Length: 121
Image (tube, rainbow, N blue to C red; front, side, top):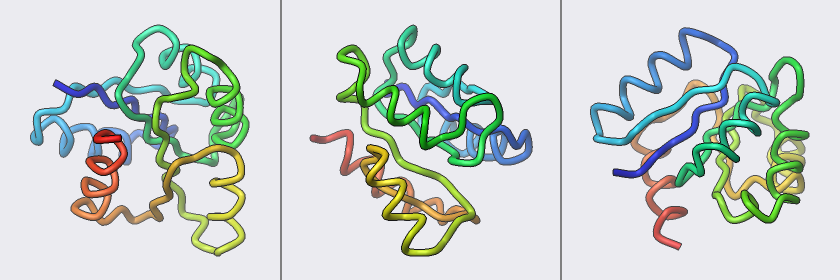
């Protein structure tokens, strides 16, 4: 069973996404801020991380950079999840080290396709 780490500070978004992924037979773990996301990634070694970018304590851009610069977590694929839909936001997320990008509200089937593509690599 593939393990997905959701880093999302909005409780409603976190619960809805967790439930939908669990129905698809993923193991889901959650963090509510960027620092907790980093700590859980190092501890749990998930197969993929869904990273909100606007987070408390440490934002998603900073958390992604830190994870991609750590030898233990650098190969974990990260998909940015954000309401920031401008091309410049996507460029900034990819430059921070995100492997892909999905805007909110999330199109679940599209997200699953991106997740599957990244976990097969």
